[in-house]
Length: 442
Image (cartoon, rainbow, N blue to C red; front, side, top):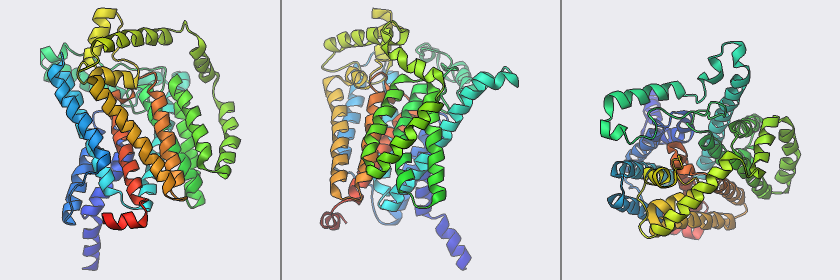
């Protein structure tokens, strides 16, 4: 009877909710882009069941409302969109990923659980980084075994992606919808690591966001074995960023590492002492890629300049209501009016202002400002909460630096992690409430 009770408890509502929480942070980065969002849906579902078993309900606080307002405006924007199908798909994706923000902020209620999530993020990011390094290794040396190995695993799910895309276009999508697709097959960047993502920039941007969590675990975890795992994960993360050959994440990594110096003077000395080791082992291609930032004849740089000029002109014309959610509206304008064959504005804020106009863009800006205010609040709560706040601050700044030159929320998995990240910040703010305020909220 005792064993049966233990077994029942092990697979009870709380255990399932925790499993959903862990899978959203660990499995989602490893799964294909079209499967990862289901971990958020599962986490929300099991959290809902767990809270009901305790006689509780999903609760919303002030931090949720700017996101809700942004989502409502997205659905309103569908009405004025020239491609309503594309706008509806993107709006639904944002709505479903918002559930990650909701269930994470409702489920995480203890500091030890928060730190466990930090460690899970570290493990997932380290593993993805190792996969990215392995992809570049095979690119250069796989031909000694078989020429097919050089690109077969980059992206990791690439073969499955192509197979499913061909099947969907041929058997599932109506002809009028398949004609809207910019490509009938996924675009693959075989000379840059994408790991389990579909794009090297999404991959490296996510690693930049994960790096502060891994660093926190390295400095503040108990036990030598756990810290060793964290150190190995950091090596994988840095290696993955380098293997992506993505310049904005390179710069974001530098900014993120600088912010992490504010963990404390001991941690700062450790960071300063190990950074030269990483700089020495990077291949020359990484530095050539970085130096290309100063080359104003570089195709990528000149193209972005043309995109930003075209998008700025479009924004001046459509500043009030915007074009509607999704990327197809701006893609069509770039192609038809400017002859630029690119999918979006290549800037996070410019893209969202184009989609939602002054209202939608301002609502997203409010979300970011709200996050910063919450992080500062966490920092001022106690000495114990300051490293947590520095972790969040470094991760958010890294994400925004990556967003300077690309629309980083274009990918489902990085949008998913961004919503989960907001849930972590919200949960930490509640966990580190002053005792008098916490008593009032219970």
